[in-house]
Amino acid sequence: QKEVEQNSGPLSVPEGAIASLNCTYSDRGSQSFFWYRQYSGKSPELIMFIYSNGDKEDGRFTAQLNKASQYVSLLIRDSQPSDSATYLCAVNSGGFKTIFGAGTRLFVKA
Amino acid sequence: SAVISQKPSRDICQRGTSLTIQCQVDSQVTMMFWYRQQPGQSLTLIATANQGSEATYESGFVIDKFPISRPNLTFSTLTVSNMSPEDSSIYLCSALGTPAQETQYFGPGTRLLVL
Image (tube, rainbow over all chains, first blue to last red):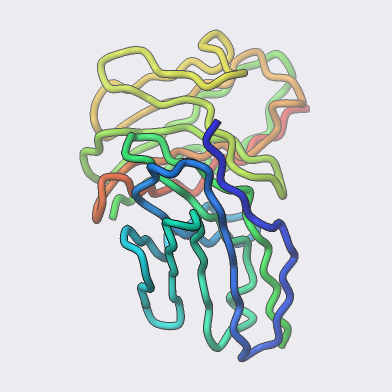
């Protein structure tokens, strides 16, 4: 059974701080890794994807991948109250099916 | 990226009735999926909608309860049959699109309440 694990949170950070969201996955053959943001009452929205070990930066967001440790993370710099949402980690092992984590709730305090 | 629309956006239905949810993608896509999400819960994959063949259902979901159609590469429907209050949920359509074929995009969802 392929699994994607996330801490459910809530993770609470003050405005302007760095929020660090973590995810581990069980399938060592996983090839593609995604982070989605889901606001309450809305559908998931893709914010980052990463394929290679290391860091990938996009604006205030940085995705980090360590395949040896089967670990992927998302850093949000200069966190804003508008970043308050549930963040879903998703992993694809090369087929058409993507496995989603249960999500981490982030709360950014103004 | 793929832009996905769903109809209806929400509905309130009576027990024992059926509701068909439509999903339209703005471009041809290889794969389409249907998910269910209870409030505050994670995504649960119902089935993969296959174009030209029967849908592939996940454990716990059956065709008689959730019949799916995929007549072409841009459209799919999910029917929730013989509804009960336990079917109250958000139903999400998803499709694989660019920039990577493994990237999934989601429709806005259909909020269903069964009385």
